[in-house]
Amino acid sequence: MSLLSAEDVKSEVSRHGVPSGGTLAIAVSGGADSLALLLLAAKHFEVTALTVDHGLREGSAAEAAAVANLCKRQRIAHEILHWRGEKPVSNIQAAAREARYSLMASWCQEHGIRHLATAHHRDDQAETLLLRLARGSGVYGLAAMAPTRMLAGAGTDASVTLIRPLLSVAKKELTDYLVSRSAEWAEDPSNQSQAYDRVKIRQLLENPPVEGLNGERLAATAGRLRRTRDALEHYEAKWLQRAVETFDEGYAILDRGALHAEPEEIVLRGLASLCRFAGKGVYVPRMEKLMRLYAQLSAEGFRGQTLYGAHFTPLEDEKILVSRELEGCQGATSLEETTSWDNRFEILAKGDIDGLEIRAVGDDGWRQMKASDVDLSANMVPRQVVLTLPAIYAGDELKAVPHLGYGKIKDFSAQIGLIRTIITKM
Image (tube, rainbow, N blue to C red; front, side):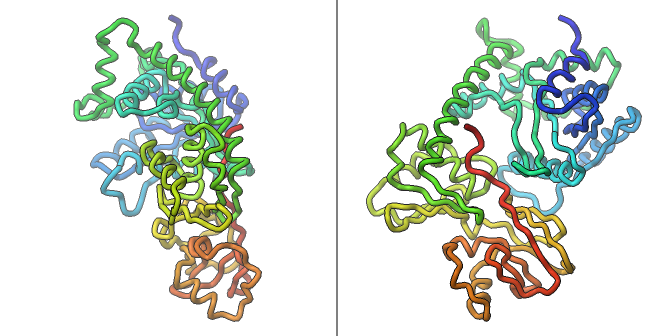
C-alpha cells in the first residue's frame, strides 16, 4: 500500500469546498491523527492549527504549548483557545466536546475562516459503531460520521463548516506518514487505559475473535447505515415542513394531528429535531425518552412536557407550542459587539455597550415591560416564549428586548439572528 500523500488530502479537502491555497483551520491536539492531517494539509492550504486547552487536567497547558512550538518550527500559524468558567460535574466529556467545537467555530467566524477540519478516520468509525451497538443505538447512532457538518452561521457569510477529510483513511496510514517524516507526536495515556470502553473496543479490533471483524468492514457497514439515515432524514424533513411552523424568536408550533401522519420512526426523528431546535441545540434526546414524549403528546388530556430543554405546551385547535425551557436558558453574559447567547441567537450590537449584559427576559423583565409606557399590544409572541428571549440588562434594569422592539437606551441598536434551523437536510 502506497504512503498517504498530501495530494490525497488535497483532493479530499477540495471536495468539501476548500480550493487549493485556500484558508483552513485544523483542530490539533498533538496526537498522531491531527498532527498528520496538519502536516499534509499545510502543503496545499493556508492552515491555522487550533488547540483547545480545556483546563481539566494537570499538564494540559504544557501539551498545548508543545503543539504551539511544533507549529512554530513548521512555520504554521497556531492558536490556543481556553475553555474558561465553571466546569460541569457530570457528562464532562460531552460538555468538553461541545465547548471545543464552540470555541473553534467562534474563532473561525472572527477570522473569516469558513472550514474547520478534524482528523476523524476509518478506525474511529469502526470503534464508534461497536460502542453504540453495545449501547443499543438505532440507525442514526450506528451511521457513519457525516463528512461535513454545519457548526455555526448557517446560511450567512459567517458560516463555519466542519469537514472530516480522513474518514476513509486507516489510523496506521497516518502514523506511517509521521514515521516517514521522523515526526514525533503526543500519546494520551488514557488511550491505553482499560477504564475506557473505547480502548477495550480498540484492543478487540487489534485481535478480532472472528474473521471479518475489522475496521475496514465495520466502517463500510457504518457507511451503508449513513445512507439509510440520509433517506430517513429526507422524509423527516418533509414531515417537518408539513407539521411544524417555526418562528424567528426560536419557537415552533406543532400540528398535533400530524403525529400519526407518517411511520412512527419518521415522527420520532422529527420530534428529536424539534427538541434540538427549541431546546439545548446540539444533540438530541435518547430514543427511549423520545418514545415516552411521543406517547404523552398523543394521549388525551396532555398537559405539557419538557425534554432536552424544550417545553411542549398544548394550545387550542390541536396545536402544540414548542419553546425553550426558561430554567435552562444561559445565564448573564457580557454584551460584546458580536455575542452568541444560549446557543440560539447571535447578537450584533452597536453603540455604548459598556457594562451591559444579556440574559433571558424572565419574570422580572416581563414585569418591567408591563410597568413601562411602551405599547406591547401588537406583540403576538406567546408570553412563555417572551420570557426566554435574549434581553439587554444594566444590572437589574431591563434596557432592551430587540425581538419586541422594546428599548430604553439612546444611541444603541442591536440585531439578533436565530442560529438554528429545524430542517438541515432534504
